[in-house]
Amino acid sequence: MTPERTPRIAARAAEEAAVFLLALQFLTRAPLPADVGYTPARMAATSRWHPAVGALVGAAAGLVYWIAAQVFPPALAALVATAAGLLATGAFHEDGLADACDGLGGGATRERALEIMRDSRLGTFGAAGLGLMLAGKVLALAALPGALVPLVLVAGHAASRASSVSVIATSRYVRDHGTAKPVAEALGSGGLSLALATGGLAVLATALVAPAAAVAGGLLGLGLGHWAMRAAFERRLGGYTGDCLGAVQQTSELGFYLGVLACL
Image (cartoon, rainbow, N blue to C red; front, side, top):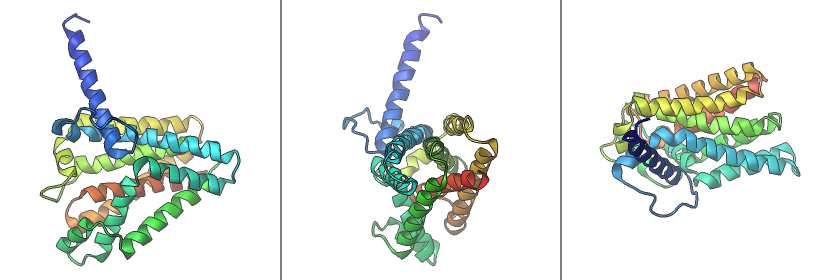
């Protein structure tokens, strides 16, 4: 390595660290300083680190599960771990799922669906979808072998965020303005590759202790969850919104858990 390259590499590493911290601040309620180096360009680049942030959220939830499982039955430990994930993210993706369910379920036209999704109030479809999603996660995790749950949580959270990043890369953002629009315009092939690689590594870690068939089932379930939600919002909206990204993350995560469970 030449002396001239060292400062450039250090500057690049510092830039990526700033982007990662912004992704962490955006997706979680981690106690970070108010100013972690925000710039519009850095914020637009955060999506490549979403699966890495997801892995950290999954690790935190997995640790909570392991502690809770020492004193509580599996169902209660799964409930506590799910609650820990909600607290860590401020229910960020779950809010998107609820809004997407309200819009897709209650909007007779594309315009009406988008209008409903902008409304912060929770409707019948949103409440039903959110309740079923949380119940499905808790029941699936409670039915898995306890020793496997922490790794499944890490893989599920990371891979499902890679699933939502793939929507950004391959679909169309339908609003003229919104938090997700700069991200939609900035994600390149390198960012997508990093996101998919991070999600893949988290799944590979699960494969070290879980049967290969279970991991393959998890990936199949994740793919089905991705496809089902994506088909619903793309057919109605002609693309995606920020709420749709939260919704596809949630259905992909649940699909991963159910796929692992079905093949064990």
